[in-house]
Length: 98
Ligand SMILES: [Zn+2]
Image (cartoon, rainbow, N blue to C red; front, side, top):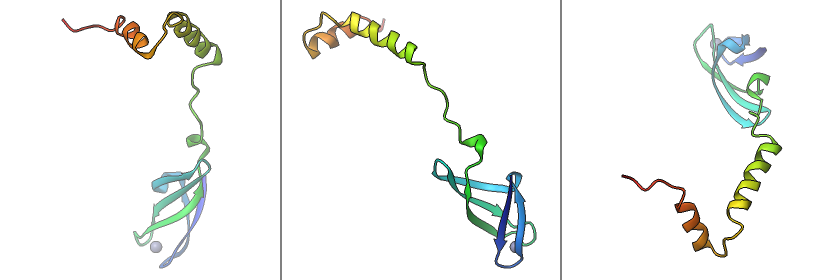
C-alpha cells in the first residue's frame, strides 16, 4: 500500500504501510494515519483508507452454536417462575468457595 503524503517543508513524499507511525480508526473504512517525514522528521497526519488486513471482523460463533446455548438455557430455566427463582437456579451451578 502506497501513500502520497504532503510535507509542508519537503513537498510530496511517497510512503508505504511500513512508514506508518500511528493509525486511529475513524470509521470501518477510514483512518487518521500519521507518518514521519523521511527527509525532515516532521510528523504528518492524513486521512487514509483502512488497510484491508485491519478491516476484517473476527468471526463469532455460528448460528447453530448460538441456538444450542439458547436451547440449553431455555430447557434449564423452563420451570423458573421469577427472577429470584432464576438466580437461585443459577447459584446452584456456581462454586461456593471452600
Ligand atoms: Zn519533511
